[in-house]
Image (cartoon, rainbow over all chains, first blue to last red; front, side):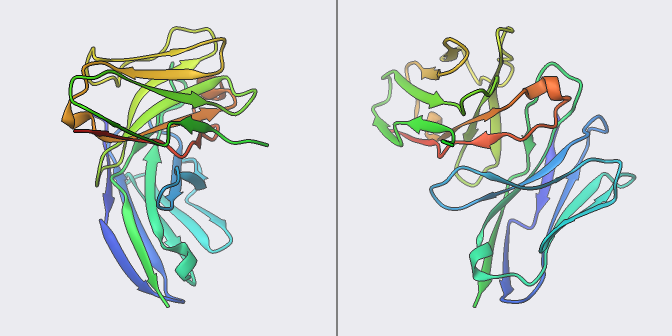
Amino acid sequence: QQQVKQSPQSLIVQKGGISIINCAYENTAFDYFPWYQQFPGKGPALLIAIRPDVSEKKEGRFTISFNKSAKQFSLHIMDSQPGDSATYFCAASRGGGATNKLIFGTGTLLAVQP
Amino acid sequence: GAGVSQSPSNKVTEKGKDVELRCDPISGHTALYWYRQSLGQGLEFLIYFQGNSAPDKSGLPSDRFSAERTGGSVSTLTIQRTQQEDSAVYLCASSLVGALAGGQDTQYFGPGTRLTVL
């Protein structure tokens, strides 16, 4: 069974702090690793994504760190803000196949306290 | 432009009834996906449509679940003889070219349909 394991399940961070969410995968054929942000009552929205040929990608306050040998990747949110409070999902997919399905982690509920 | 839309936003049904959930993808997107999000769980892939190709139905949990996509646009997910374990949020997503992009084009999600089976 292809799996993506995500931790922690929930996270409380003070405003201005760093939020870190970790994911691990098993299938070495995965070659696309997006992070999605979901607010209550809304569908997930792509936040940032990385491919395994780079070890880090940064977009504004959001950074993905990727460790191919360990089969792990993480999301760092710098200077966390109350507006970042949401559920975050990591995911993975395998290019070159007949489908483009995403395998999701179980999500991390982030609460940023003012 | 308009994003992915889904209807209804909420659906309450009785056990044993059939339900239909609708998805309108972003115009021009050739790939369409259905996922299911159960309470406290991640998103679970159900089915994938790409253009006129045969759909990937590998994620459908039972033969009570079926989906179609008419004219390469609107999709309907049908659940027959609903069970309480079918209660979940059903999410639809679309992407521009899907697997033709080597698995790396962005999937845009709709707001979902919350299904409650009593």
